[in-house]
Length: 237
Image (cartoon, rainbow, N blue to C red; front, top):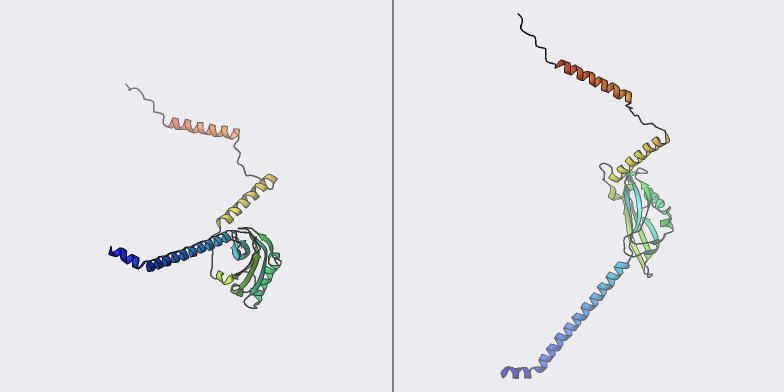
């Protein structure tokens, strides 16, 4: 058969092509396995990797009062956390803001440990104090820490107060409003329990009830008398 003869004549070429295909398939499989191992390692590291984030936020009591917060948003614990702070220029307001951060031991001496989703926060500054140039502040913070295996991390963060320009708030946060109402209720209860204030009570005694009943009986008798039919008289002779 002619096609069998052709195969026999080109057996070497067919074997070479087949070997090339097998080699390519082997290389692709090895690459996919290596990629899978790399992705698995990255996923494992992500599940045990800490990530420290330094941010600011407005307080419920007023949007002009700011807290600074250090939070571990990673899934692993962070150890030996330290910070270095730098403002973009030498404006006095910016230096004051940096100084107020450095008065906190967490920034000047660092933190020993932050677990997953654990946060350290403190009041930072009031926008009512100082010049309006405070809203132009940009503070660069470099966070350094290590994970449970000793691997070192260095993460940059920026506190940019210019993001607050133009913000406003309508009304009062519900939780703050509820807290104020509960505080007022507690204050009133304390005044009553200590005798500082007395309840204004309108007492309704038995004498009052008897007088009310007598008045009602009189009104009922008058009403009955008013609607009493007239007595008929006989014919006159």
